[in-house]
Amino acid sequence: MTINNVMVIGAGQMGAGIAQVCAQSGFQTFLHDMNEAALNKGITSIERLLARSVEKERMTETEMKETRNRLKPAVSINDASKCDLVIEAVVENMAVKAKVFQQLDEITPEHTILASNTSSLPITEIASATNRPSQVIGMHFMNPVPVMKLVEIIRGLQTSEETYQAIREMTHQLQKTPVEVADFPGFVSNRILMPMINEAIFTLYEGVASPEDIDTVMKLGMNHPMGPLQLADFIGLDTCLYIMEVLHEGFGDSKYRPCPLLRKYVKAGWLGKKSGRGFYQYD
Ligand SMILES: NC(=O)c1ccc[n+]([C@@H]2O[C@H](COP(=O)([O-])OP(=O)(O)OC[C@H]3O[C@@H](n4cnc5c(N)ncnc54)[C@H](O)[C@@H]3O)[C@@H](O)[C@H]2O)c1
Image (cartoon, rainbow, N blue to C red; front, side, top):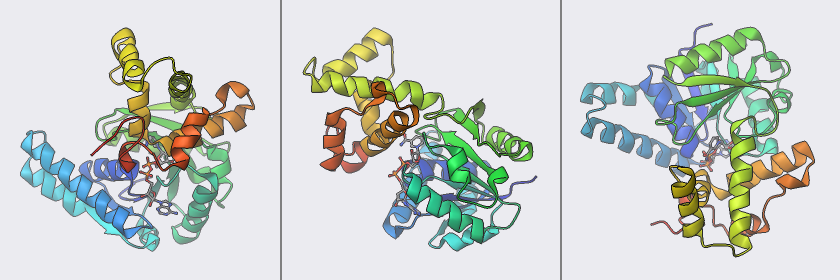
């Protein structure tokens, strides 16, 4: 199947990045968010990143203009009726995602593939909110999307081979590397990454070391490019908490229980970089 028109739903840090990469790769791209201010912020951040690419000579002025022309802010989700593929990147919450997929199932043409950028939620369950489970798939991009090469592709129980092949091909067109993983909580990436971040938060909670020192140990001692607490701030502490809850519930194993300090920060609205405060403070 040919994919020409794409809609990305959710113009937060992931959705904006996905929309940018789709538009850059030649797809007509609609970006939708239920919150108009978030939509405008997403478009502005894409424009800023494109301009920076021109400054750094990674892109020509003409390529920037063509990319911008392919990118269309969509105030209404109904523009999904024009799309061959919709990639959902709203909050990591099953009830919210299920509602979006139900709506998309009604709005989009029969052939449209519905993908989720979920970090951890079961694709099979998201698919069951629709009447087209064979055309629902996980497409898990990494943050920041324009930079990171990996996309985990997750087949739900009923995802068809045709859907899988179309998404695999599209991922290559985005200049990314697809890796197929099974539909298990956290897939591969977050099953390994999130317990490490959660353990770093427990280490802080128990007073073993300061945030800076925990991050320094992992950067200088393990050669990680970024410490786990800074990475958690960049991912968003609400997203980290949702993922730990999915792992905890999905495996029923207490080793995945979210650290109480993580819960406390999220309750306080300290969501990391996007809210200006997490384990560190941001301007
Ligand atoms: N942050 C990461 O590093 C990361 C990495 C990979 C995947 N993800 C996944 O991507 C998804 C989005 O994460 P994010 O970090 O971009 O979140 P975010 O909080 O930055 O953005 C979410 C956006 O979705 C919008 N939204 C919420 N409900 C909506 C609805 N019903 N319809 C339309 N828009 C809606 C919000 O207004 C917000 O702008 C989550 O599923 C997350 O698990 C995140």
